[in-house]
Length: 145
Length: 248
Image 1 (cartoon, each protein chain N blue to C red):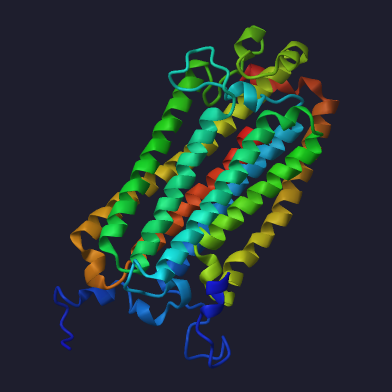
Image 2: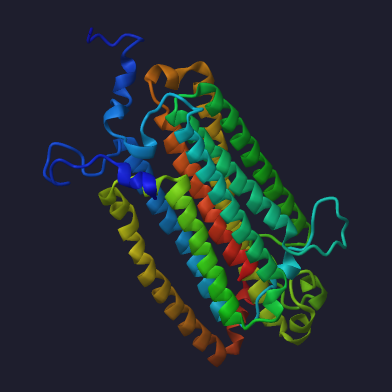
C-alpha cells in the first residue's frame, strides 16, 4: 500500500479504522434486511412507543390531573417520567447502553454533580424567598430601572 | 440490554494496556464530553429558572400562557396541544435519526439518505413551530425585559395567569413574575432553538456528504453517529424544557 496522501487513502487521516473499535450492536454489518437488523429496528420502534405513551400521560397529567392531585405528588411524577424518558433516549437512541462499561461510567458519573447543583440552587432560592417576604418593596428596583 | 453483553470479552484487564478501556473513537468520545458540558449549561439555565420561580410569590400558569394553536382562531382554548405537537415532532425526528445511524451501521447508503431527509424535515418543522409560538407570545407583548411597568393595568397579564391569581396578586408581584418568566422562557427556548438550528445545518452537511459518497469511501458512517448524538441531545434537552416550562 502506498503511503502517499492521494485522493484514495486520505480518509484514514480523519478517522482510524473503526472496525477494530466497535462490537455488538454498533459493529459494522452488511445486510440491512437481516433478522438482526430487523430486531434492532423493532427495538427502536418499541422505545418510540414508550416515549409517546409517557408524553401522552404527561400531557393528560398537565391538563386534567393537575386540578385534582396534590401539587407535590404530580410534580414528583412529572420529574420521574422526565428522567425515565431521558434514560430511554440516552440508553437506546444514543447507544450508551451498547458502549462498554468504563465508557458508560465516564459519561454517567459526572452527572452526580447535579445532586449538589440542585440542592445549592434551591437553597439559594429559599434564601431569596425569605428576603422577599421580609422586604416587599424590593420591586422598586425594576420600577426605577 | 442484551446486545451490551455481546461486547468483546476482554482478554486483559480494562486498564491493563494494549487496548482502549473505552472502546470508542476519539471523535465520538469528545462528542460525548461536549454534550456533558452542554448539559451543565442547560441545567444551569433550568435550575436558575426553578430558583427564580421558587422565590416569586405568583407565577404565570402554563395552561393559560400556552393555550393557542395555529389557525385555530384567537380565542382557541387548547392548552398544551401545540407544545405537545412540537414534542412529538422532535421525538420523531430523533427516531428517524437513530434509524439513519442504524442504516449507517449496515453501510446502507440509501437508508441513511432517506432517514436523514426525514430528520431534517422534522428539525425544520420544529423550528417553524417555535417561530410561530414566539411570534404569538410577542403579539401578547411578551419579550425579554417586558412587563416592567407596575402602573400598567391588570389586563395586560390576562393571557398569562389564572383568573383568581390575576385578581388577587399585587401589581408588583404580577410584573416581577411575568418579567422573570419571559426572560427565562425566551432565553432557554432560544438557546435550545439555536442548538436545533445548528443541528439542522449539521444534518444537511451530513446528507450532502452521504449523497456524495464520502462516508461510503471512508468505509463507515461514524459521522452520522456523532451528529446523531448531538441531535438526540437536543431532543433530550427539550424533554426537560417541556417538563420545566409546560408541566410543572
